[in-house]
Structures are given as C-alpha cells and as structure tokens.
Image (cartoon, rainbow, N blue to C red; front, side, top):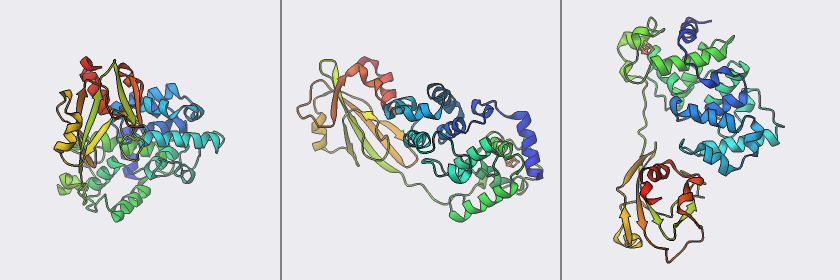
Length: 340
Ligand code: SF4
C-alpha cells in the first residue's frame, strides 16, 4: 500500500461520517445513493436516499413504479434526467438482466446514466474491484497534493488525473481507499480554506509547500450561460386552473407546469397582451442552473382563457402539488398560499 493510501485510510477510519449508504454492500442501494448524490449535497441527498430505499427497497420495486411516481419522489432534487435514467436502468436490470445487478465495472458502465466515476464507485464499494474514483473532490485533492497545473476540464488533464488515481489506489481494499480519498477531499481539502493543519497529507503536499493551493485545480473553459425568461400563466376560475406537461427534451422534461410563454429576451409588448388581464404579477424569481439563468414571473389571471391549447390539462387549483413540478414552482406555491 502506498504512503498516500495509508495516510488517507488512517484518517478515514478515525474521522469518517456515518452516512447510511456506507453500511451496505448492496450494489442497488449504492447505485441509488450515487445517482442521488450527483450534483447534490450530502445533507440534501440523505433524506432522498432514505425515501427511495423505503419506497423501492429492491430494484424490482423501482422498475415496477410508474415514471410519475418516481418523479414525484425525486421532486426538489433537480436535474430530473437522473431520475428518468435511474428508472430506465432499473427496468433494464429487472427485465433484461433478470433482476441481477451487474457485478463488473465494464458492465455497470453500460447502464444509462452511469459514467466512469459512478461505475468505479459501485464496482469498488460493492465488489471491491480496483477501479479508482475521480470526482470533483479527487481532482482538487490530487491537483494540490501533486501540484498539477493541467486543466481538469481538458481531455489531457482528465486522462492524467485518472492514471494518477489508478496508480495510487490500494488494490487490496479499493472500497475503503476510494471512500477515503473522496472524504479527505470533501472534508479536509475543501475548495476554500482547506484544513491543512490537520490534513493527513500535509507532509507530502506540494501545493502547500509551493504555496499554490489557491491556484489548484486549474480550469480552462468558462461556462457560457444562456438567459431565458419564463412567464407562467396561472389561471383562476371555479377553483380550477390549467397545467401542461413539459414533453420536450431539456430541463424539467416530463414535469408539469402552468402554461408557459418563454421569451429569449424581456417580453415584447405583443407578448405582454396575453397576460394584460392579470390581477397579480410576481416579481421575477431568478433560477440559476450550471448553463442557464432563468427569470421566472407568475402571472395570475382571474378568468378562464379564451384559447385553450391541446396539451393543457384542467385541474383543481389545490391539486397541483399532486403532480411532479419543478422546484421553483413548488417553492412559489408554498410561499404564496393565498392563491392556492
Ligand atoms: S495539505 Fe492542504 S492543500 Fe494539501 S491536501 Fe491537505 S488540505 Fe489539501
């Protein structure tokens, strides 16, 4: 075992957080936790993991659930394609693989929604296969410990970091090594103000020695952010309203929303005539995603619309929360109970 591995595993055994998915070797439950935790903080993801585990204790239970049910359970986590892929793969395991979760990295990575990191995590945690995980925490930790200035968002950089992680892994106990490297990266070597004084790697850390911690990791690409403007039409008539399903690809696919008018710039006068009869207009609420900035306004209109689109569905105003809806609408409903 390398000194690197000895140090992080020693620290991990003493300091690890007791997270519910760490007490199992069941690949299905590990997969659930890994998909839920993508782009989600541990504090938020834990309750979702426990909910999914309770509602769908076996892969067959998830496979047999309706997509509506799965999306409802996912509501609030965002990035809904993860839930759809999870459901799709559960059906695949149940129907094509006879309910047997694949037991090797090369097979696990074929599941929809599973990339290199997730396949390495599942195959090492559940089957102790020596596959090194490289997630954001690992990139940051390795770039600092070895003072690497290769950009982590370049093909060359990613290959280099993966090779380095592969060399460092403890092949006897890859599960603990992988958990440990991510835990040290997440808890000790945090993005801002890392805790170098108590870090198990501080005696070998070149970033600390060379005073380059703040410049690591290096990234090249600037993310291009698109601006979008969403206008939701909230009709009120006979305690009813209209909703529609977002069937197109992209954000919030298959979730429900109030009828939407989307503009790529601020709405024109012509577009505004559609909600000229409104009795209340919310202030714009900004919703930030990694590549999009969405300004959302809710227009409340006290009548039945004259023109009704084919994809609109008439529902009781109070029943909207029975449908899977984007987090921003859910929050709006909670914060404006006078309307719903
Ligand atoms: S010594 Fe500091 S910068 Fe280096 S790995 Fe530890 S926490 Fe990160």
